[in-house]
Length: 146
Image (cartoon, rainbow, N blue to C red; front, side, top):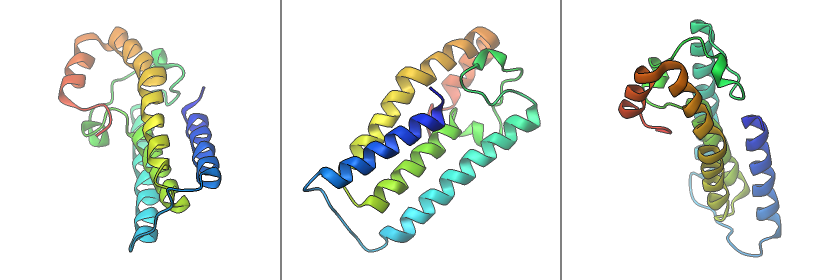
């Protein structure tokens, strides 16, 4: 399943959870600006990663990691091996703040679990096959999320 669709599914789950749970609502000073900051940061992180892929002329399709022509390890990729997924997580956390239900943090954690086990794991296997020792060293130097 394409990662943006996965993010959308988890967003819908967050919305449903916020609407049906009779408890867990919260509010705090600064919630609104924090929400906007997370959304903005999430979009910027994803955009920067996308631009870096385009500059290196390698695939941005996470469903076909074997088509990667280069290993991108500089810029934002020197802080996160998966900045696009990190950006999606930031969008989901911001959406959780918009909804104002504390249980949405569980849903955001579910997104991380899902991506780690059903997307990133397979990407990492493909990239290890493609780039070998270079990718292994990169994995040791840079964390998966942040």
